[in-house]
Image (cartoon, rainbow, N blue to C red; front, top):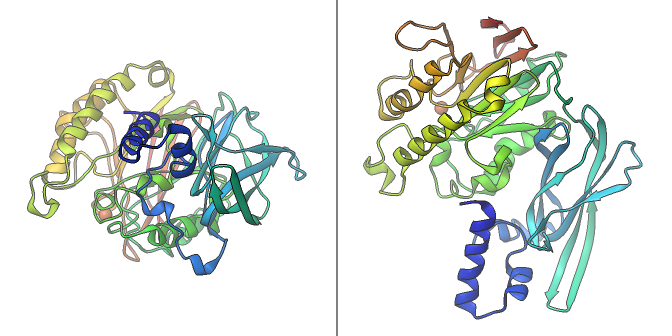
Amino acid sequence: MSTNNLTNSRRHFLQSITGLGGATLAGSLLPSSLHAASPIMTPADPAAGHIFTAAPYLQYAAPDSMVVMFITNLLSYSWVEYGETSSLGQKAHSVTNGLVDAYNRVNRIKLNNLKPGTTYYYRVVSKEITGFEPYKLTYGNTLESELHSFTTPAERGNTMRCLILNDIHDRPHSIPHLVQMNGAEPYDFVFFNGDIFDYQTNEQQIVDHMLQPCISSFASTKPFMYVRGNHETRGKYSRDLHHYFCNPQGNQYYTFTWGPVHFTVLDTGEDKTDDTPVYAGIVDFDAYRREQQQWLQEVMQSRAFKKAAFNVVLMHIPPFYSGDWHGTMHCRELFNPLFNKYRIDMCISGHTHKHGVHPPVKEQHQYPIIIGGGPKEGQRTLIRLQADARNLRLTMLDDNGKEVGNYTVSK
Ligand SMILES: [Fe+2]
């Protein structure tokens, strides 16, 4: 079901329980495409006033678009001002079913019709909404972020350079530390390959342990993408985690192409069987992984997959070298035959906390499997992946910046 369908079904449900008309209800209770009962609709810390709980951070980028996210403490109407010079001049906000997203806190605003390979300047602005009557809306303070800039990817670009982190496990200082290991080497985006948290508690944890360290080190100028690990499926806030990120296709498993590389991102779910008592009957990952197998089959027959110079799979639990628990074995059973059949160039994972570069093994996996380390000091890694039309090069650095592995695929 799409986000819009979900929003519509919630609206119909709320209409039926309140007996209110659609327009009034949609305007007052469902400002964004986010669900109404969630804590994301409640001021995080009302005494703090109208502040940015999280300054702008960039999400999925395409040659003609960029997604800007930010969080305010109080319910407000927020937008992005942007342009090719620091005087800006253009404005974007999000609209859902004819209503501008407002009376919300977690903002996800897509800038469309951008020029490829072009630098844009932007800031985000937020006006607190202090009163919301049907014909009388009252605004409070207006907040403005600092001015930032980003560069859109080139159209049909011939290079891709990204950094991959995994298994941070609620150690926020590791994010800037590992990104710094890259030094002055240019990169286009950062990818988080799961288990950035131990389990999900609340919004403050997401802000303090991931968003803030990303913002302070790169995320207002470079986008990042993210896939869950098994740990992000745990805890009382795990069902709200997706509100804070924006993936291509708006999904938890997705594809994107950056220059010569087509990426397929799988959401590998939990590591134990669904009926394990600790899950208390409220997970259903077997069916979810099978759904992804069907989707993967379609992806691998797509034009984007076939015409890419390189195909890389990103998935938290690797299909080999991670024991024989159910999560690993089910990923192996469902995905590995497709990886072999459609000849992926590389699989990059985490999960084991033991870094390794595993070349292809006949009769098992005909592609290299790279596993990042973490989370303890001395075991953390930064993976640097770079490609041009001929070579896909991976380098893995430890948390002192020493190279601990590499792999190159040449065409
Ligand atoms: Fe982990």
